[in-house]
Length: 512
Image (cartoon, rainbow, N blue to C red; front, side, top):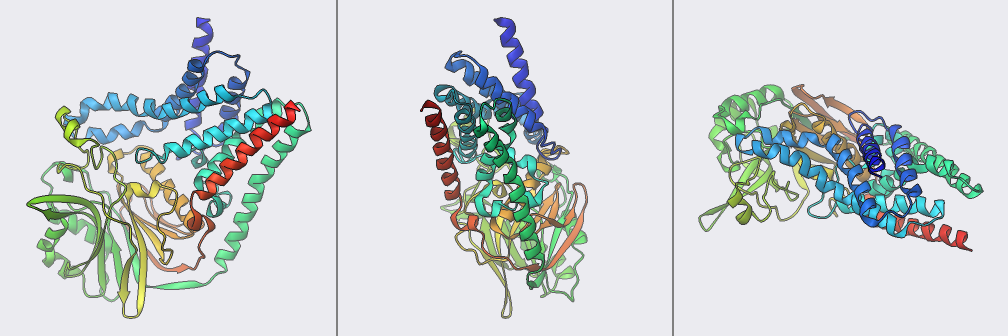
């Protein structure tokens, strides 16, 4: 009995770890046909061994999956020596916590597992897809490394995101990857028909994507009133912890920007890029900006802003736009803050144990009031964009109710994750948001990847990891509002109902 448990434990650890290789930047998605099918067969063939045992199976799969795909999160703790003691704790705690979701999924599967293979198949997919949605939404949400991201390099297949969204497609691909098990256990034509249908689905999605691609590239081109110049930089995170000269950082950013005084240019600099400076202090460097920029230029950058309330400051992670004389034109204050990175839950209690935010020494950031479209004007011409700061790009759903904007603008600081796979995983989310919303995504990053991604998820221009410089966007192809951007994750719940119906229908057919 003990030998069986050791074998089962090693098998599931192997399956979870192997599944992580399907994710970016490796994208060995074909591994999932093996790992999901074997995991499903393992669970379906288990005799009644008790709820705790099945919870353990699910938790162990999740733990090994997240341990091997999210290890890089602990790199963010290495920049401040006071956090070093948390590195081994967080290395284990984060995947152990995320594994609880998969444990719950498999425990429920155990409680309601039908003897009918088709019903069990749809129930497994249903629970897996639903638990991934819950993981991505509760407790501020952490929708990182959903299984669908293993297919992030197949753009035409992903075009269906514009209709059904990430969570719905994630549910479908779980079924797709588990379908070999259904074929192995086939007992009638019904199982074969379902397998054929699941095989035809990706072909249909791909065909739809090719159709969209053809229409998109034959569509109208809209010239923007400003050249949008996206800056990629590799400025060390030492600027947060050492007395780095602020002017040297500004001069490096200007050097990467290559200002042209004859062109109307909107420069986009990364998140939190200028050290030792708040938004209301940037005019201290007015002479530098006036030397290189003129009235044709606007500068947008991630910077900390603050508001004085009764002699106490509230701090915000902001994206702010200035003219060449550093007059503030508009700003957006981040809404989705990173737990322990930008705010500490129950701060008054946890501060007593030495816990503080990782990214700053001012305590927790405050949340902004709302997400709004920023509009830049040049006479009668307008440039509208939706700003998202760093982590906010990972959320699937209604980003805004106002669809009247030209592109999504995302600024990020990816240096917290070193030279790991983390920045590459972070970048992948941008493609999904572009397709879901049918909008260009403009991404400026420090120690990461800067890019221009079109509404089909294709990268039109990119500065790869470790490359400093700039890329320009001068015009965009027009696109219509997507079905998903209109209805959001309401569509996902239609798929949930469909899978519930399939689960009970096939079970009823068998019983009859």
